[in-house]
Length: 330
Image (cartoon, rainbow, N blue to C red; front, side, top):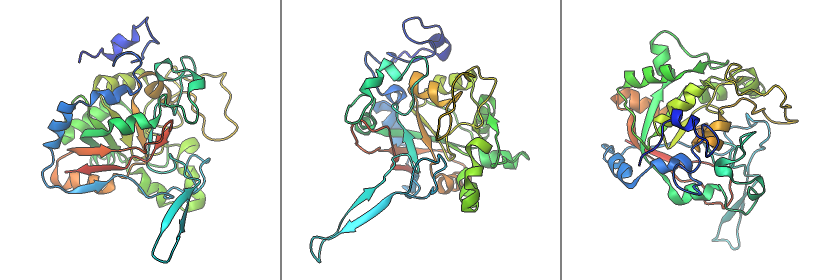
């Protein structure tokens, strides 16, 4: 498929500049997941050499209190209809409270709205537009690639301070990829390890909110160059082991910060975040708080940073996000 470059998308006049709306066909609501093809899945299956599997989801309630500050703990209930039977249900199950995929409903662009021009009134409970069920039906399966920023910068004498803001650039990501012997292919599922979750969980509970967000969180820089890097590599999805994928506080020089936008009464501000153009304009799914430690250890041990990976979101019509239910196979 002939996919325009990001620079070409920036020149569009038939849709918002810098958007992929319509690139994958009229009315498309899957975005970059379309980069996964039957051919790319078959090729990725050939990466399975040992059959060793790696769970990429943290358990529910791992992140309590929630780093976002607006998601209470999930309550698991079990009942029995007779002595030989068990059944269960969940209360307060926030689909983005632990390892997660942010679907295309998660964020709208302040000027252009939701991905593909889907109207605000269509994004509601029970309606299918941009719902996570579309990703569940398609499935995310293909070649996974790990960029282990934590190990790379530690080994090169520049360890990441996980307690504060550090903005990683496309050039730095390229350096990590080159060091690992990784080249990218269309349809790749990119995983980025910082080592942030072990740091966060190692803090006393009362101090954990200080480990992300407002006080600083390492991650990807907010910039047009980063959007270009992500889009032109044609990733199907990009996921990380931190809270949000991107660095916070946001880059004040991105050109995306609106000084007139009021801060929300609760929860983090999204003003100037990479989330907005990445989800609403380019349609690239975001993964957050993924469990990457065992996988990263295995990649460091065998020197192979590519593998087969699957993610199957909850098949909830109209869902905004979901636990990834992800597994990597080496």
